Image 1 (cartoon, rainbow, N blue to C red):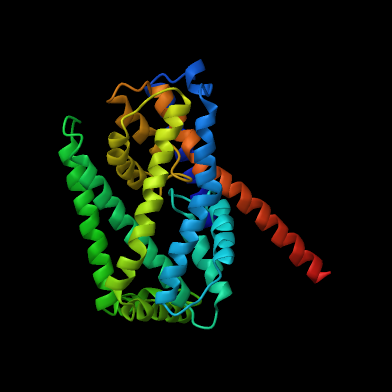
Image 2: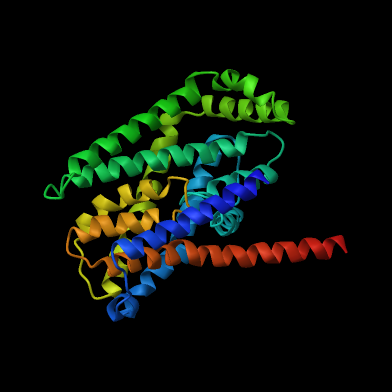
Length: 321
């Protein structure tokens, strides 16, 4: 019941945020915001979302799994990612599918609970760190943007928090501090063992080697996802400075991670409007690009994941029969 209430509350917040955006900016989809003037530009975002990024993401994950002592098949990791994106669209935050991935990878490697999940913890921490550094470096190319100094401080502050979290995970027995809370749950001992194993795995990982090995793929994936926004603007016959996109998209992604709406809807669109309206992009166009970008980068992989999930369910039912 609590989960249903939380889901309903998040759904309501999502709808209210979207309604607020429509009323606040008097959004009305113009012909330009709905018609693709140069549809051929969409070929590249679709290719990136369906083929290139999934391969790179699975390769990145495989590298980190290697550091925790697991040798995984890249195609199976791609399947897990697709299915997780599908179910993750119903969770709060723009990155809710990470929880589904942890659940699925633990089912694949149940011998040592927490071992496989530790690779996802590292992936998320490394990814967010690179995101902060990416936005911070490119922010110096748009000095004329209002409040850019504030956003730089936010990025540095978020990076500092991530470094502290990483240090706590690999240098302390963090789980012991929460033992009294875990005992209140029905399966508190199992939860405690899981997190203890997870932290033990993180402590034994050569962090510097893991960062150096995964950084090229992390940066490549992030750059391609930002390039997608540029290409979507090109489909609408708008030439937005790519430097501005590289500087603003990391901040927009961090904003969409705040877990108050489903898949970050409303927060992400508001951030798009805020940033791109400052360089003369009409609010309807900025809103449309945000929706199209989500549909391509998340909607298409989620559709593939939905079919894979349905196929898996049908096979399980057939096996039971």
